[in-house]
Amino acid sequence: MEKMKTALTEMLGIDYPVIMAPMFLVSNAKMVIEACKAGITGAIPALNYRTDKEFRAGLDEIKAATDKPFGINLICNKSNIRMEEQLATCVEYRVGFILTSLGSPEKVIAACKPHGIKVFCDVIDLDYALKVEALGADALIAVNNQAGGHAGNISPKDLITLLTKNCKLPVISAGGVGNRKQLDEMMSRGACGVSVGSIFIASDEAPVTQDYKNACVSYGAKDIVMTTKLSGSRCTVINTDYVKEVGTEQNWLEKILNKNKHLKKWTKMITFYKGMKLLEKAAFTASYQTMWCAGPSIEFVSEIRPVKKIVEDLLKP
Image (cartoon, rainbow, N blue to C red; front, side):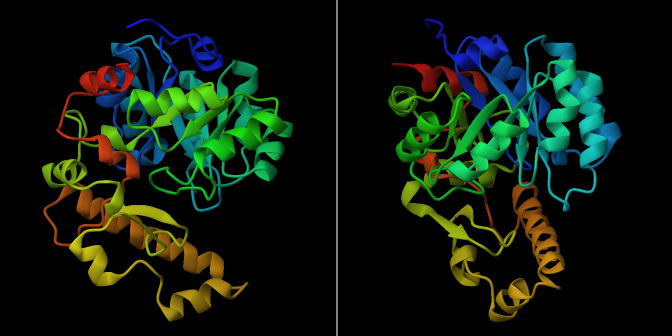
């Protein structure tokens, strides 16, 4: 396949303008290594590692297998009490780039700039995009309403247009890409690259259960629903029988607590913790509590494949 030249490929020295998105519980070192070998790049949430020792072992594994740039996703709000430790490790290992989510990236940008580590920031609207641009971010991850996990509110084309017209930073579109036609559409709108996650869940290298992978094959875009029960924020999940049983909205007590200015911080942290434990149980064990996170692009998943083949199919004209 012919290499593509964009602001993203130039920044990272990769062949194709695609980031395999960091997926909570799903992304691992093997997936990132295969992504790098296939000419794209990949990222892992730092929170996928329980300890700094495990995190360092994962970074060592990737660096031993490839010299290509890869990324780490850092949660920047107060719920991530390990953020500063994770950031220090990223800087020590000179990772290629950091993706920031939820909260101000100011500390991350300040720590990374002196070492040439790129910082790409998740944004869902223009206001936040302008804030991170002023802080010195290197690119915007435009999280649209087709993204998996914590999605935005604006359509891919409208968000790309809004950001490219009003910001100077390169825009990487996140959400709504499952094949080459959709990739090209995002690029034609002005994006310099795309961040793609859900189609990689059903990969040989993903560490999740066969049931989770099979669900990404058998369900489609029409089966994706938004729930606030996992983290308090809107999050996309597959509409399994269990999701239908428990519903997608927080109960009346949770809603009241979330509106109380003194209690909402703690309520959200407890909701987040419980939700992440539920996702973990569903991802790694046989459980009737099938709360599986995925986005609408599973519409384009018809079989479980190696990461290399998923990349090849995504780039195929």
